[in-house]
Image: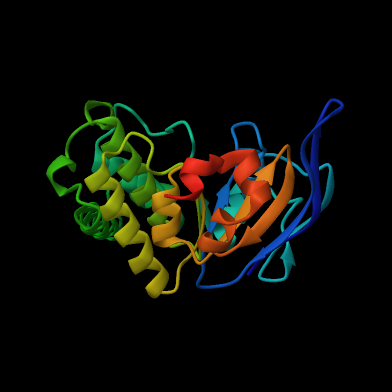
Length: 254
């Protein structure tokens, strides 16, 4: 589904990503791990179009996407969350989710201005879909609350729900468990596994190795912008290069 072919991104003379190649197969949950500054978020920015590759190519369903703007990449079926939460703070949870559904709307400016029946029906449909999505992620109690009134962990879930509102084929998650307690993290893991079983493909950046072991079919390890290892979670934890660069002995033995 997703293929990176010798992808590099330079900032000045510094290689944030250096000749990275890997594939993500449809229906997989793939983890992207590594130390801080390893280039993980930069890679997600390159895939989602927020940043441009210096060299190399990115393919989605065999179509090159590395020269497309973010909105075109989203329309092809790639959605993402961010390391730093990007919600509309003063809008309600429901309104944030409806924003994520903007590509599904068919009403034109005239029908919206005149509040024609077709526009009102569409608004009701999107609102019902937003409420259903909020309920699925355990956010139904907060549907009418402004996003900035929620805890950090709940805001994370709103951002994930908004990404899902676009009906993606590939979901990119940047540290989705940040700010969540153990119970919330476990529920998110169950949600991701459920989404995978429904056919969604997920590429997730995460530092929580227990979470990675719970949800990931395959793991890619970055260090200094380069892939140093890939394999199953168990294979990764047993790789001496990964233990030395990232996990440490205690984490590897956990």
